Length: 344
Ligand code: NAI
Image (tube, rainbow, N blue to C red; front, side, top):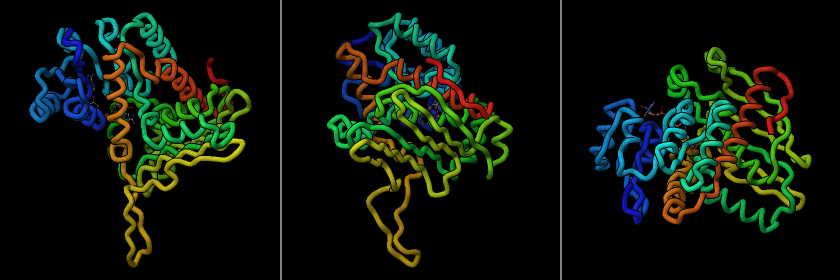
């Protein structure tokens, strides 16, 4: 393994998000080198190597793990591969960053938690990037400073743009995403735990597919809602969806005993208001890369810094496991139509 002033990273997954991580790791992070990339699609590997000047390219993940120049593995492959790839990278001695969700099933998430705990000197981080978004961070600081008293209820909208639906349908036919709650609402479930400071106890989730009925055949829902009771009688209301006509709508409200806070109430693309014969138009962000560009970069900077400083980052494997437990309980409730207790 390499030079201790630099972190050499091998990235797996060069799709919608992985390609963005590749650019950040290659060019935008001090003391970081993107040394290897891996995808099962050879053309993606060749493109990234050529465009970003990456020395090593692989179509086989285990072959990349044999590269002794690497210090860390960054995982942006489809969710069903995360746990296996995390375990293999930890066993091979690497620091590991994994995209969300940690796992699609509780057993594999708990297995990863054990693996992380048995490698305490290797950094592990899960990609809950919203915790690194400037607005979400600012809200956290305000809450900690007592600005809204004690937070007691969180209301979250996590809605993907309708224009991304054809791409999602194609993706979902060959990759099991975990369903609406584990795939989409997982960020909100993590934020709820972070802001409320307590764990979930029980959940009732409902949903359906009204425009794209083929989603039902994939055991998924187009729009869903979950009502969650947290410890201390705190509350969460989560709306997740994939058919948002106006764009990528990520909105969070935290209601406290002395006030409330809202983040992203109008999901504007930027500060421009267009005034014409339609009235006043504020265009909306159309996807996660646009809305969370800064957060994806800052979470990767935190991962690299944690490695260089020999510490664990703020987002831990336990956050991945507890959010997966809540997301999985939402899925069970949605599938069964019943109130579900969240696994401790
Ligand atoms: P994608 O389908 O666009 O890309 C997946 C990539 O992994 C492709 O390059 C594919 O060739 C590669 N791949 C597939 N199987 C592989 C294997 N066995 N070994 C090596 N490479 C393999 O998927 P997308 O949208 O980029 O999502 C990737 C992950 O990132 C998912 O787990 C998703 O949940 C997560 N994600 C997180 C977001 C966030 O906001 N934090 C936003 C979007 C995705």
